[in-house]
Image (tube, rainbow, N blue to C red):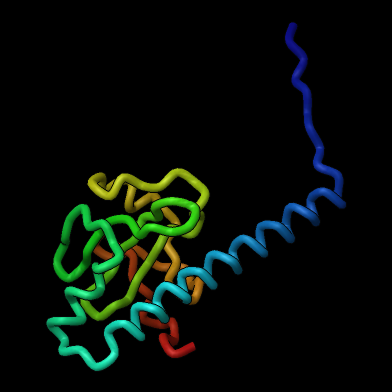
Length: 139
């Protein structure tokens, strides 16, 4: 007869884990915001068609669906899955250290946790991440 062992995380360790998770989420949002700010500075004063081309300048594009470019952005910790729209809106996976979704696999994209540059969770519309219409984009 096999005996099942249980593992209980002490409250202090759980609190430390929660703090690390919170710091990681904040760090992710800060880095994504920095990438978007650099992009905005880079394209300031460009025509719309030039902006569209510049939006993928630092992105390895795997494929295009409508006005969305799907691919990977190079970061200091490696490549991070990203979806960038023609208007410059960028979504990345929420966990940069985790396994990155295969950008050629629709189910991988659907199953991933996506956030925008401000760390707001995305909703999935037509298989791609978008901000919910009820979310204030200027927040």
